[in-house]
Amino acid sequence: MKLRAYQQVDVFTNTAFLGNPLAVVLDGEGLSDAQMQSFAAWTQLSETTFVLPPTPEGLAGGADYRVRIFTPGAELPFAGHPTLGTAHAWLKAGHTPRQAGVLVQECGVGLVSLQQLGERWAFAAPPLQPSDISAEDLAPVLTALGLGASEVMAAQNLNNGPHWLGLLVDSVDTVLALNPDHAALKKLGTKVGVAAKRQAPSGGLIRRANREARAFTASNTRIANDPTDLEVRAFAAPVGVAEDPVTGSLNASLAQWLMAEGHMPPTYSARQGTVLGRAGQVFLSKDAQGQVWVGGDVVGCIQGTVNL
Image (cartoon, rainbow, N blue to C red; front, side, top):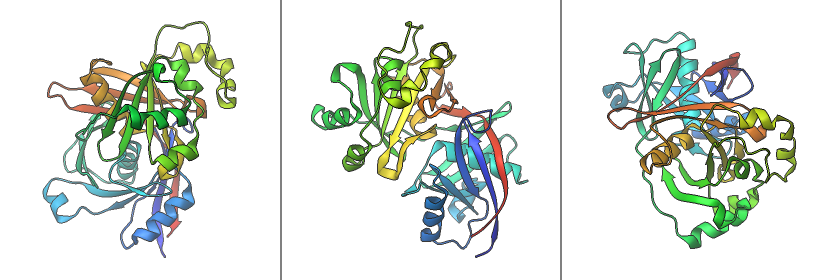
């Protein structure tokens, strides 16, 4: 064991403690897979990352660093908020990218590019592999979520490294009222992202019934008048996270799917974490070449060392 540089940051927010926290071990050299997984389980954050030198192949491809990403229960080939959060921590630690305004991260899906857009960084969404889901496979997921088939506007399997089942539902009210059976989702092995387009205020959150949603009734006006365009929730019981506060990989794949199908415009913003008391905001845009970029603010919260 040795002292290693360590940071904890909050991602997809410009206000500390309202986004998705991330633990970053800035020196992961010499740690075994088991040690990394054990530490990620100990932090109990949705993700913990370990920074390493690029592999020879990554270095040849322009990588500035390599990162391994762990949830409390498993390693991920890619994830969005760890990508932005690790980049922020790496830069804050005094490192300089090989190309000004550009970062290249090596991870399980290969090389991921990031670019600086003003004060905010954005990552290039990895290629999406979408596929249809049958009504037979969808039915038990809807049961676990407490959703009726008539409330689902569209459904798609989404894979950009992590696999998500993406659901577009009829209203923000429906999204916020969900009280899933997480044990059932874990048994099904399905991570689910549920989203709804934000419409003009309807005069109340008509579908809310669960305890968490009722706690937010007092903030109806603030939520209804939120400037974002999409409300998102992410349920990831199969990897040890009942509900993720703000999820970059999910928002990336949702954007690729929803933009391609005409459900969302080429530029929009999403809100996530409302029921958890968070105010995560994700900025999505598609450039002239068709590449979707996923951006967000990052705030430093803890800086020091960890004996690991």
